Length: 303
Image (cartoon, rainbow, N blue to C red; front, top):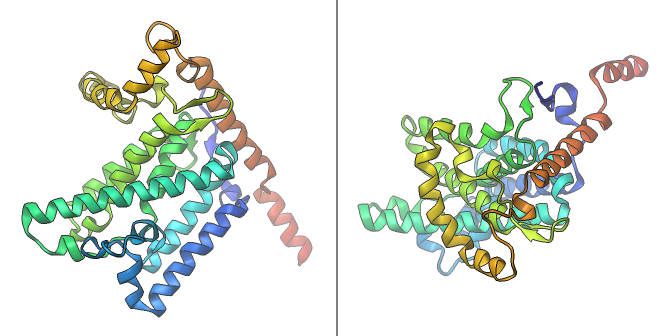
């Protein structure tokens, strides 16, 4: 039995949270600022050659959209995806996720740009202004994959667990035809990976008093087709030991293991509860949103 589609009909553009509306104002304000004062891009966008001493651009770059298309797309995606994630995570954790992932993306992009410069000696890697909210949006897709993996997009009938993988596949394919992709492709890749690392290993779960989500359904290999699992899993296990080896050692010292006896965070029951919370939040949003018939009725009454 298939899961109900995600955000179908009129509910797509209703029920936005106050926090997401506030963040949308930040994105729009940032865009207007760089349009009125173009030199502001040099101080707010991530320009690797100027990051030192302008260190703050590691934080501000993620909230500056330089094009009208970028600000419109980012604002709409923020509002739509935010109303799915914020009720499940809570406003504080939602904002924390954005801040941490945005900062990690900027660090990774900065290191990548400097490395590419030393490899190729092309100065455009040092002076290309990089900015935009797309990295966080990629992270939102990972969050949606985590909380409602089996929900389907109403238009395409694609399960949410494949959203991040499909987004990256399309972005990589486009990069072969557009040279401008250098400004956004690394941001999307790092946004996906950094958000997965945060959600997988570090996000605190008050209901279990544990960090992260070690369930198999949210493993790194879950981003790939099952046939590639035997290839991906050994590689992913190396990074797994690097990121949580100390945690496993500490846990085993207290009598718990990640092997035969699963921790609560990796237990199938806990994974099911997490999905139920996500599905329940989605149903509540859909229930509170006015249907198309109600909108038409209200319009006719107003006339």
